[in-house]
Amino acid sequence: MFGLIISGRLVQTDPQQLAETQFVFSIPDVDNVNHVVVFLTGQMAFPEQLGAAVYFSFPNPQGQSWQLLGCISNSKPSAIFKITKLKQEDGSVVAHPFGQGGGPQAHMAQIGISVEPLSQLSQLTPVAQAKPSSVEPFVEFSQKMLENFFNYASSFGLMQAQMTPNPSETYVPLSTLQSWFQTFQRRLQQNPYFWRS
Image 1 (cartoon, helix red, strand yellow):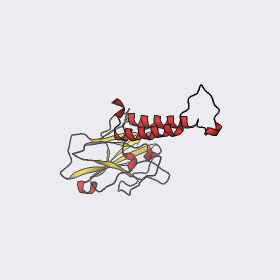
Image 2 (tube, one colour):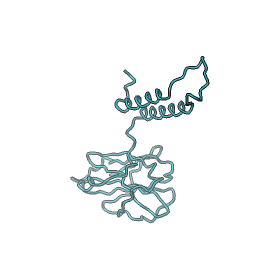
Image 3 (tube, helix red, strand yellow):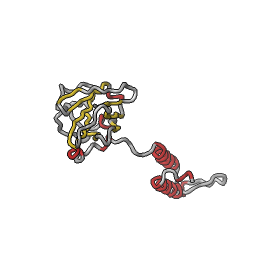
Image 4 (tube, one colour):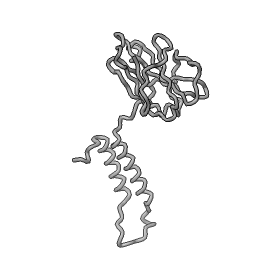
């Protein structure tokens, strides 16, 4: 019923069944994994009013803990989750009946799937770091480029008393650059493609 996709690896469709409503996928060599896709294979739909909570467990010195990534259901049969930061931080750990599962192994993470009523799933709050960035790569690049340019240009800033007159140089006040930077950022947030017009 469930499948797991990790970029560059074969699709997994054979989770270990721990209980009637609980399944676990193992992810070996998780250090090289940034995103996972969990999906319904289409062979069987959820019974009416049921869906599944998707959890992530990364081995840590304190033992095995589970973090809620999100949910899948008949109306949302697949989801992409970002696990990069979850491997580095403790995040919001939840107690869950997946239990220790024999204890974690180094570099071996797990994705847990728990079939639950949709009414319960709607009240769950996934960890914030699991959602992939909704910012388009172009917008993110533009923001980073602007910050880099502003920091670079302002590093050459001099007070008027420090300046040596040079008739062949043109000087632009740093306040003008700062005003342009703020205006560009504001316009980029309002419409990422404003520069096309």
